[in-house]
Image 1 (cartoon, helix red, strand yellow):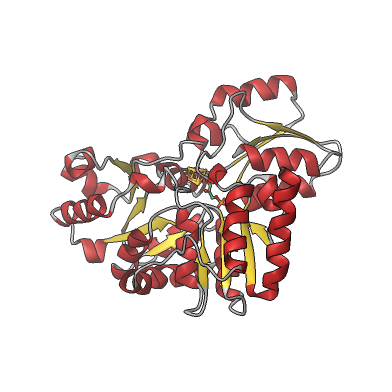
Image 2 (cartoon, rainbow, N blue to C red):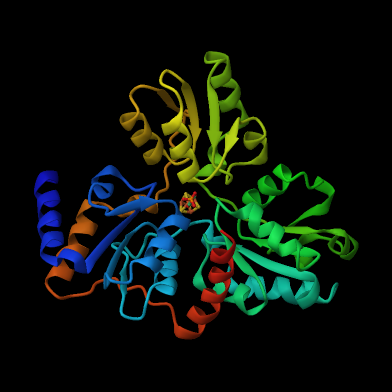
Length: 350
Ligand code: 13P
Ligand code: SF4
């Protein structure tokens, strides 16, 4: 039963004491979050992995790229475990290193790429792409520091190759007042990303054609519908949503920003929240003095985050208590070194 599983996980965790740290991303289910020592957005969890070097085992309840980031930032004496290896990210899968290499090579036929283009990769990406950025002078970003990262890039090179999320890049640039004609989209399945050479020469922001399958489900009509019902209500969304949704929202930010903002709002206020369902349901439960609604009428749930459940967590922690490491996440050393360079550049500015 659920209670038994919960008790078994607690017992294994107790047996491990200070040796283990369970990290839970804000999108994780309640049955997992209840065991987390810390929960947060991807930036916060990455920082925690780097700071808590006294704990040799990090059980990461989130998706694969987050566990890789924890492995890159943690010390060599630390072991990162992902309770289900199949917990990936559909957005991260939208940029393969071969495609990024090809893009870089094609851009290089148009401009002196190493001096003119700064690669910036969203942390929602494989470690090898972070390493690509590290090696080419570039940087990583998260949903909470994308603006600072874009400014950092433009202070150094005239163009940015931003991947793999088109929407985070565009929404951030829109907020910064960047004119739309300075942005182009790079479709990895077309030569030159589907752009003419003149357009590439003119562009300042090259947005990889990738998206989050969860956040793309929110529609502008959902905002209109909510506003009709609750004209006094506020709409808050994640920057992975389409710009047509973001432009209609009152506030935009990372999962941590969303939680902080709605939690701090006065009692009685009404909110429509455009991000993953588990986070929104938890906000509803934890903030009964406010009216919190899910922005969409359809279920927008991250299916891969959802793979981490009570049985997987219990299995990972019980094995650990028995002296067995299961689902060990190991980023190869050469990748780790360059990915760390890109992550450190980001950490230094946020
Ligand atoms: P945050 O960095 O805002 O936690 O978002 C991570 C994520 O996967 C959003 O889809
Ligand atoms: Fe990836 Fe989207 Fe899931 Fe975040 S919500 S982990 S971006 S698929």
